Image (spheres, rainbow, N blue to C red):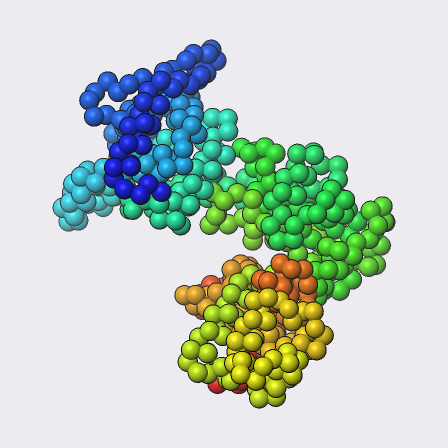
Length: 504
């Protein structure tokens, strides 16, 4: 970001002269071609950005003419899109700040109408309702109309999804202190939620016969268990595997959220058996060996759709699809990673060491076993040794250490998943996702992901979230309303062990 006002002023002047001579080729609404020059401002002190906004963001029609105003020409939306795409990153921040602040709600009008609504409270109901409707309409930001018009041109919806990704990055990085940015993001999220309603999405099964472009994107977007090569990808869409994606008519060729499924006899307790130990590419599926569906990877591909519910609907649609294909199938479960567990554990160890409570995490016998397996110096604090083990992953190369650490790490992981909360809900984002869907925290699995990534993120531990179809609705309601977590006896047993050992 720009470090000081002088630098900002110099760069702003450079950008002004650069934009002064830039032109864009825009198709006219009638279909002919024309060129529009972004010429120098016609009024002193008016920037190129302000000139563009004045041209492309129309005033909000009056309340009386709100349904009668003709839409702007398509070229206006294209001009906005082309101009924005040509901006550098920091220019986009400035532009979105101006858009949010100068083209939002007319606060003076809102205040006047709010006062009028208060004055009508003793009048008849029809008058009150009309005053409320006028006030509601006045709360519409001008840029909302612009977004609606942009969504109707080719590539417009994808453009807006990408624009919201920029907004989320601005908010996360705090690149702008403009409070109106948050309102702009909220308005766009609301529009995207309507445009990407589940009824408008198409469920597609991805196979080796799917278009090459789709297969390539499936490979690139895989965020949980990276695809190694084309043979790996072919196996993931081959026998005993299913891959599904939601697509949208306004974004052809773009999978929005992707779900990978393994068809197995029993509920899998490790990812190696799914992504490493495949059946042959030309194997014939034996229906008698397919009793369970394991959701082992779900990836959202569009950063701009964050917060727009897609993944939970995809799982529900896929369950119906699999039930249709395999009527006898009764077991549905995830095999999920536990991102953040190791980071949380390092923080917990640091906290206990600082408070002088390091001995509380492990029993005396467990500390002795770890020290013996380590062969560490007598002067090294055991908590520091454990922190180093977790940070380096060295313990995975020692069978003795693995045996010593298994009960410790399993109960710590059980507490992390079940007991650590943010605003009353599960701290772990994957746990929160499945629990909101109504799944049960069913089984925590030791050495379930022995890849370097799995060891670094979660000490190689994974968890099954079991979908008992006759319980998911009730579980979801209880979690969302009462923050109650549905969990198996195995999980509750690990939580109880942690509470006992940690004096909680």
